[in-house]
Length: 377
Image: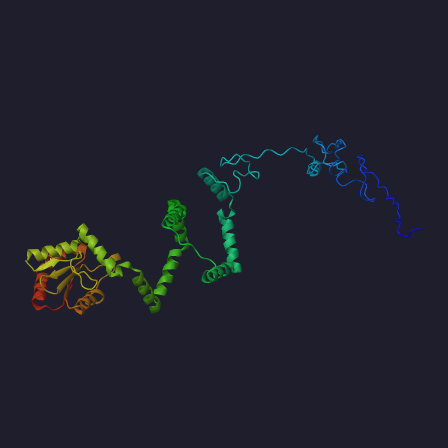
């Protein structure tokens, strides 16, 4: 026997069972009953005609998706509630005109699609009407809860910290945005309503709020430190303390040609008695931020005229007005005469004091010394 002759072996492979769906294809594993994709829950072999699935048990008349199922997807809960399943209604088309259906029930446009101005207004009114913070009792209750828990202070401190760290950078508002915000706040301000304002005033009067506030302000004003701080604050924020604003105001007066009754009377008096005094109160002559009412021709001599009162009926006296005025003009090389005339309701006194006033003006021009002339001396 030749040892080089090859040995031929016959190997018999085990026979696999056929697929249980009836297609005649053997399964790949003895443990499998169906070929992949041929079972009752999956697809059906191309050689087998699709079998009809049973009807849904809810009574809708549609067939289930699987042979073992009793209900279609989503029909079981409807059947338990005692209702009959109905097909979903078609959603409306997007209002922007794209021709597509909206994504959710109740929506008017798809996400990201534009809205018309009427739709924006309607949505705004709907959100306002559904906003619980529009109700006074809810808003008060929330503010009280925030105050009790201290959340308002925590939130304020957190916002300050984030602004300081640059985590929040507020964009600079444009002029158009400021105007829109101002108009919106004015239109939404309840105090613009006459009925609301009247009710607030009546409530404050009934509760004595005005008297309480006035008493508190009087107690604060009696403190010298508080008074000095308030006066300094008001002076610093008063634009009329700035020279350029004061000069601009007086230039506007000169354009309009407006003079007070006291200035007109004094100018007429000087003209009738041929005194070398001319009117400069409309910005024609300036002395370091002050515009005198009158000036003596050809000399650094000025005259200030007042009726004893300033804005809001605050009394002007020699101590708080006349002497500081003279000190100001003398500091810049001028002599000054301050004329304290009777107030408007005592105009008849001016006629009786004309001769005395004219004599005082002539004395001031002749001597060149600062002086104060008051009608009650």
